[in-house]
Image (cartoon, rainbow, N blue to C red; front, side, top):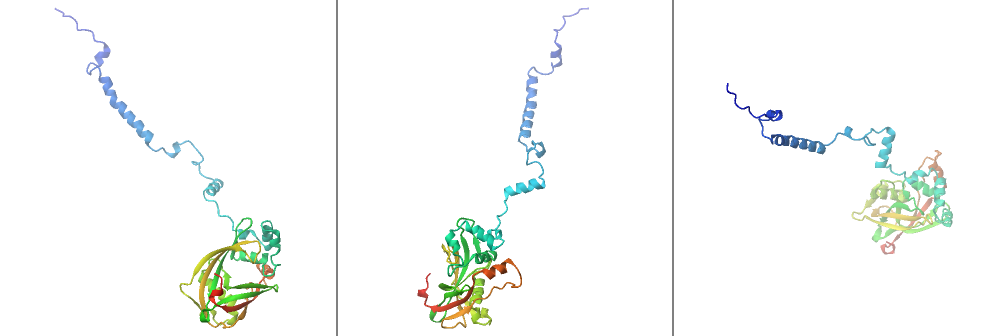
Amino acid sequence: MFVGPSPPHTPLVNRRNNHRPRNATVSSALPDLFLAAVSLLFLWSSPKPLLSLPPNRFSFPLTPRRRSTAMSRRSPPPPQPLSQRFANPQSLSDWLESRLPSDSFAAWGVKPGTKNVHNLWLELSEGETSLADSTPPVRTVNVVTVRVIGKDGRILVESHQELSDGSIRERFRPLSEKMKPEETPDEAVFRAIKEELGSIFNGDAEGQRIKLLPGSYSRRVEEKNSMSYPGLPARYALHSVDATVQGLPEDDFCTEEKEYDGDSTEDSEETRAAGKAVTVKRHHWKWVSPDSIRP
C-alpha cells in the first residue's frame, strides 16, 4: 500500500481554534469590554440608597432630645416679651435703675406733672407701651389724637390736667389717648372720647354723638424725651383723626376722668399698682383757632 506523506502537525491550540481567524479573540472581546464599561458608568451615576452611605448624624433617627436640639437650631423660639419679665413694679424699677440717669429716674412721680414706675408698669401690663432692651430703654407708644372740630372751625384742646397728687400738668393739645393692643384708630377714637369727655353727657349714648370726618386720618412718628418719665426716650406713633361731637359746651369746661375699672375687692398686682399710680382727676378743655395748635 502506498502511504503518502503525513499532513503537517498542527498544535492542539490551533486545532481548537482553527475555525476562527487569529485575531478573532481580540475582536470578540471588544463588545464584552464595552458592555462592562457601560455597566460601571451606570452604577457610578445612579443614586445610591441611603443605607449604602456611611452612617452619619443625619441618617440616625432623632431621639426627643436630639429632635428638640435640631429644631432649635433651625427655628429658635421667639424671645420672651420684655413686659413679661416684670412681675411687679419693683422688678421694673430695679431693671430701670441701672439703665437711666439716677437724677432723672429719681424725679419720677416727684417732679410735678410726672408719672411714677407704677404707671409705666401698668402701661406695660396692659400692652399700651413697649420698652426696648437697651441703655437707655426706648418707650414706644401708639397714640390716637382726636381733633374735635366745633363751631366756626375751632379745635378743642386740653389746656391742662389736675393730677391725683395735687399737681397741674400743662397740655394744650387735642384730645389724645394711648391705644390698646390690636385696637384700630377708629375704635380708639370712640373709646378716648367716652373716657375723657363722657362725663359731660352723663352716660347718654356718647357713640351717637360722634362723627368721624372721612379722609381726615393721618399718621406720623415723633421721637423725643418723655415728659411723663424724665430721662426715658420715647417714640410716638401718632394717629390723627378729625371728628365732631354733638352736645359739647361752647365755652371752656372740665370733665372728670373715669376711674380705674378693675375689681377693687380683688387683691391683685394691678389693683395695688393702680392705687399707687399718678392719675388724672380732671381734664380742662378750651376751644382755640386751628392756627394756634402746633403740628
